[in-house]
Each structure stands twice: as structure tokens, then as C-alpha cells.
Amino acid sequence: MMSQPIFLEPVFKERIWGGTKLKDLFGYEIPSNETGECWAISAHPNGQSVVKNGPFQGMALGDLWTGHQELFHSDSKVFPLLTKILDASDDLSVQVHPDDTYAGEHENGELGKTECWYIVDAEPGAEIIYGHGAQSKEELASWIHEGKWDQLLSKVTVKAGDFFYVPSGTLHALGKGIVVLETQQSSDTTYRVYDYDRRDAAGNTRELHLEKAIEVTTVPQAYQEGTYNTEAKDHAEITTFVANDFFTVQKWSVTGKTDFEASPKYTLVSIIAGEGELQSGGEVYPLRKGDHFILPVGFGPYGITGNLEAIASWE
Image (tube, rainbow, N blue to C red; front, side, top):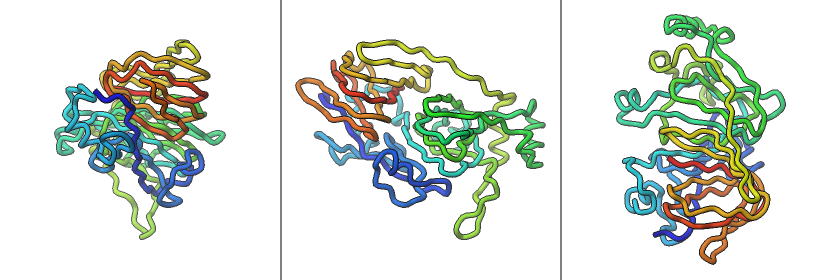
């Protein structure tokens, strides 16, 4: 049994809407000033994290998953989750993702994409698009084809610390000035609905996927604010944002020494603020903002000491 956490090296993606906040807020070395995505814990073929420590150092997460199931004990054929940090320095396109059934039939067996966002940072007045006002598929299609975006799209003002669950079929977009940690199914399938008529450096607009988007978008679809349960634990608060068949996502706010039991499931952990250390089996592992690691099945008991915030998830 693996007796240490598995730290991972992220993969970075340049995007037309990206910026420099992944460097400014987390200290990452980014490829350019248009870096939009940090694929922090990923075994997806389009961008795999690499193990940074221990006996599996240098191994891609996908290979670790297929070759060492004793660390995970999962029934999933592929590593089912993907953790990202997104820097929306400009508006993202309005988009929607399919569910498992539709993606499996139309996207070569790819998983669907249910996701969720924890707002790490947001400029004053920053907004997301979440949901729409159409009351039927016919009305949805008509408003999309006629470009009635103000009538169709619903906007929500956000601030740091907010959480949004975004199931497949949700029309959505991050707005300018937002940094999020995203927990999602391991999928890279996106149907783009509207991109503000932007053009790339070559003068080309990006591809839209209107018919597929209309087909998979849930109707009707209104935003509803969530309520979450927070429990006190030693010198920590544990907030559970979501727990369903896709994933469980928690926020750990640690302000001292907190003890945890052995992990019953493998757990993905991202440090989003502060610093501290993880102690287990006489070993000490420094933790700092921007670290991402996996606790394998059965790891622990362990303690986390410091002043930090982490997002933890598991299938």
C-alpha cells in the first residue's frame, strides 16, 4: 500500500481568454500571458499530470491508474475526475456539455461533463452566465439562432468563496475577472453556443456547435442558490458542497492541527490558500498554495497543520 501522498505536476493550456493570474496568484511558471487553464490533477489524454515524488515519480497519472489500481480501488475504466484552475481574464464562450449517454454515443465514448466551480478570486461585479430563460426547446433554438442573448442568458454576480454546481445540460460561462477551481468529470467535450464574435490572431472565429448544444441543453433551466453543510473538526471547518454519483467536493479550512482518519477512498486535494504541512507515519510533507496531490486508498491516519484552505474531492 502506498504510504505517502502522490504530488502531481500540472499541465497548462493557453486560451484566447487567458491571462497571468495562474502565475500571479499561485506562482506557477506559465507558458504565456494568455494562459487560461491549469490541468492540476488530470489523466485525460489531452493533458496528463505527472507524478512528482516517490516510487512512481515521472509516471503519467493515466499510467498510474491503469497499472496500480491498488492505490484507487475503483470500478471506473478511466480516471473519472479532473481538477482544473481557470483564469478567466476575458469572458469565456457560452457553452454546454453533454451527459454520459450523449457523449458516449456522439463523442467516441468520451465521458459526459458535469462540473462545479469554487470561486478562488473575482473582481468586483464579476459575473457568470448560468442557465437561460427559454421555456421550450423551440424557444431555446429560436433565441439562439436569432442571437437574442440578452433575452436568453441568465447572469449571476459572484465573489470569492462562492460555489456553483454545473450539471451537464447547463448553459453557462465564466465572465471576465474570475479565477475558479473546477472539479469535473474527466471529459474535454464542449459545445460552444456563443463566442462574442471574437477572432483569433489569424482573424478566424471559433467553431460553434449549435445543433448539438440545443439537443443537450436542459429546458427549462433557472439558477437556484445552493445551501451547504459545514462541520467543525478540531482546528478546521469541513464544508461539503456536493455529494452525488459524479463526485463529492469539500472545502477544508484549517487553522491549526487537524487529524484525519485513513482515507476510505482515494482523495484529490488542491491547496488554494495558505500553507502548512501534512504528517503521516513519521513523515512530514510541506504544503503550499498551488500544490495538488492524491491520497491513495487507505492512506493515513494523517494530520494537517497550518493555516490553509483546500478543495478535496473523490468519486
